[in-house]
Image (tube, rainbow, N blue to C red; front, side):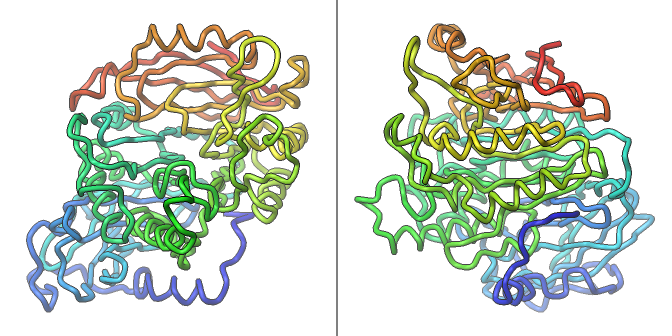
Length: 517
């Protein structure tokens, strides 16, 4: 990986080192669990939350699990550090083991385990598993990134976001599993912080919104018990970032949605709890160990010379949202903050890749909600930060094949990115795919959606596809073009559903913009 996020400070490194002590260096024998059982007998079902992997490099990948036999009630583990053996092999039967060791599942990290395995071969599939207290985890499958200098090849990426437990089952993951992507990109709203609803399809655990670490842990654990989500985590590496609902709807930096009800101190305590629980449940590196109410999330991953993926953090560094069109045009407002913006531009302009992907939690293309003259925008999206968004789009004109992958909207919205949305004749500088939600908003009335949104197409001529089904997007990226499928399911109101391709689109290399196929 080149051009990664800024180096963490010494305090973060010390904390991170403690979190993964012994994770990747040990080479102990993989003995039967009865011979290497934990000193304290563990409850049954410690691997209820499954396994996952993430952030693939040419020579490494992060392996994850969390010991939680009673997942919705604090985890149910003894208040002690537990050794967890791990093994990684070149085959699913573990006949060709290439790495093994012992990690420490610590109570202060919710007995989560993050193993940063290195020394692997590029562009290879591997299988992995864990053992603790004589219990064996499910087997996971992962894949490393291609060699840094490889120019050819292909990459299959699934884009997902917005999975509200209460709005429906996570049925799109069964189809995603069948499509077998090389990597899953999840761009936010992995959980929802909303209170339990008696009328929901599936009821949130607890009695209210989460505020404490224990409450966020329980909410993440509930989501991790979804079988479709668990199966997809076990089948491919994930690259994740968060949006707002992992903490508090529409928060900006250290400003909550309702500052009159959450003091600054109370909200920063909530941030610290939410970010800690996020780290504990995601397959991310130790650089993401939170430092109180701060977490390092923006980072860069390279897939040979084919694709560079810039993962943004559009929550921690943003100015508070505007409330009017004039406010949205304030040049002092920032979505990224100065340091992250420099990092992004350096990574884009210095990229050796043919495709430069930007994972943005929120939509970058314009959404003009006012028919006819004038503008009305969503201020929580990039539209609310006009000056910074427009400057970034001007930079895109000098970047090879920029493609933005977004979420948040609970809709499919696929657009050309123009240098100036105020001028429909301005140059097209890139493409954006806003993926629909996994389950958020449930099964929408499609006729009502189109009655509301189709009249806005004339004011948004850059839109190519808009739709309100649930699902995800699937990308096949090669040297000459990027092919996209909008994969949708029939329903999220039942645990199983049929799936189909709603639309096919293509971005040609060195020809900015997107067209339907």
